[in-house]
Length: 347
Image 1 (tube, rainbow, N blue to C red):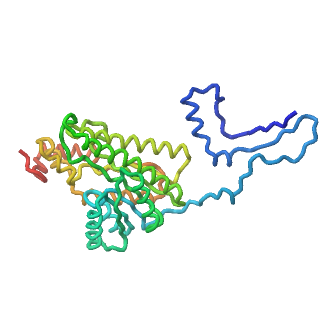
Image 2: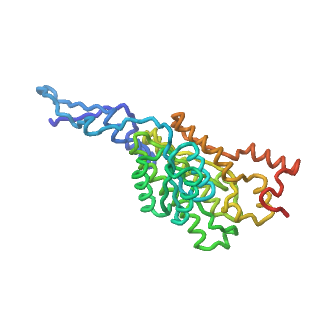
């Protein structure tokens, strides 16, 4: 009689024949080799009446063969990487992190933009804590090179902020949008975000201290319509879904020290927003709800830094412009005429 091997496990799963295909895929995703190595025990059964011999281990795992990286506490100063950070809210965030004493890596598609931002930040804050390089987030190799640049100069990244985004500076009905504009918006805001998340997660999984990834949302992320920039709104809606999916994937993999968050700056008076200030409705909401990038960054950065400072491993949605704040400012406008013509002259 042949020797039979029985695997006893603390993980109880339904039998394969009782599962639908979709369920099978789910339960298969739970079977990670590290979990098997830790929770499964193996024993040999000899034929009845035979002389038992010392069993030969079916699987032997040693700490030397599979070293487990000991988690490290995340303490300031933090190493921060921000995509699309040579102007607008990305630049303002970089400036605030530098003021807080952190090390910051900025990037952009434009070499001239990176050089100009480095010079400005150096003059205002000091050059010893800021690095810059070119990166097109739509190109996988560019983002891999960005990671390599970060590891070479900073060794690791604690906070990665996916800020790069585009509306192609186009505010028109979708039916009038060119192929080039649509490709620019979708590849930057959706494909670029996916590539950056992939590379950031892979890098942080190999860091003993893990890391935090923040995906910036925008108009449309709450599911409300965005007429005249429908493509942009659709891509920003996908940001929230992607973030939730990544959070679920990391939970399934039992990863606790790499966390993906959402970051909502609200309406910021950047070139991107102001390029659409050409209708009565747009002018109204920009005046009532928008704030300068510097003011928004002063609120967001302390809230971002508080997450690693508190040792939090729970996903967070940090919002500058809350619903209560928005309704309050709209009410003040109608009741008292507040903020009229604040940034643009209304008709």
